[in-house]
Figure (cartoon, rainbow, N blue to C red):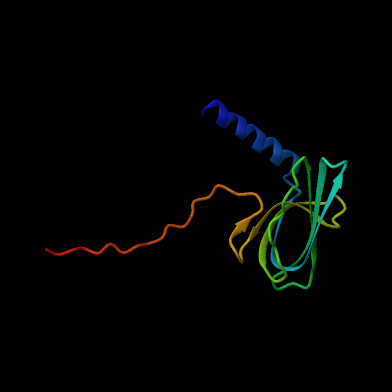
Length: 132
C-alpha cells in the first residue's frame, strides 16, 4: 500500500467515523427544484438549490438542500426537471427537517452532480467472421 492509498484510506475512515450514522440516500421522482444564485461584492457567489423528492411507493416528501460557495466564478448546478428519477446521496440534518446533498445521480438522463469513477457499461458489438 503506497502513501497515496494510506492517505485516502485514513480520510475515508475518519469521514465515516464522523458522519457514518448520518449518511443517507433517497431515490424517487423530483417534485420541484428551486435554484438561487446570490452575488456579494461582485466576486463571491453563493448557490443554493432546494429539491423536493417523493420516494417511490411512499407518501412522504423529502426536502433536499445544496449550498455551494465560490470565489470569482459562478457555480453551476445540474439540469433537473420535475418528474426526473434521481438518487440523492446526503447527510441527515441534526433536527431531521431536511437533508444536505452531497451528490445527485440523475437516472433519467444519466448525469451526476459530482462525477464518480465507475466503469462504464461496455457496448457489445458483433464481430463477423469473414470466410475465404
